[in-house]
Length: 296
Ligand code: PEP
Ligand code: MN
Picture 1 (cartoon, helix red, strand yellow):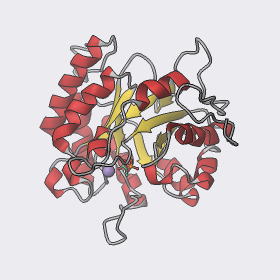
Picture 2 (cartoon, helix red, strand yellow):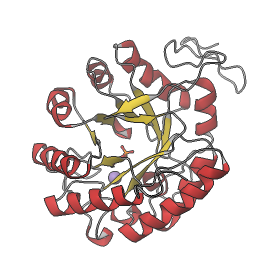
Picture 3 (cartoon, protein in one colour):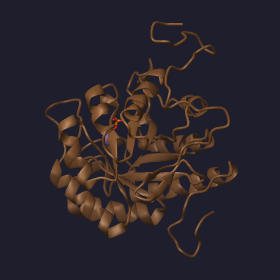
């Protein structure tokens, strides 16, 4: 047992997280994001551009992903970028465009908040606050989102252990906010020759055994390659993910961030077809927006 109360070897870890852990027989918690239940029988797909760029870009994307069966709209207005010279988002104007897209489509909005002092502004527009991988251990930020009433999507840090990730969730829960959804988005492996990150699908059943919190999987960042995203999306659903986070853009080649991993509308539609089949095979379902066929 380490000083933090956590066992060091596989099979003997004793979690020191009190609120995130799953008690024997406890069901997965259902977290409502703008009325959409994450953690129930439905595989919830959250899709949209990496960055909000223009009104037409975000509206077109919101309409296309809604038509294909996405239930939540994603898009970054405040963007953490590896280089300070790259596009870092439209800021509050981006939040306004996301709100317009929500009004046009009914899709609740998931968007990143990068700093404790941004939480108030982002919470005025968003239905769910995303904590990005680079901020998973920003404890001031975790404490701040622990104080708000909105759900939080907590992405796994680039090199965070599952224990560290769940402990970050514990900060939000202990702060009084019980609406936490986890998101596996790939970790640093030794080989980045062919993929940007290594999508850790081990984490899905591990976290689902340890914690009652719902888990989304983000194969867009997890692979960094649009051609790999559909296969990993299907694998994530087969592994028990409660939903997916997928980057989609009207013209991926022109996306101002994460172009290489972003799907166009046709590819997203095809992804949804494959995901529906796998979901049915594991007794889950994906909503169809076509009212004539409510679910598969
Ligand atoms: C994103 O969702 O666009 C993003 C920046 O993700 P991550 O924090 O996982 O890199
Ligand atoms: Mn991105």
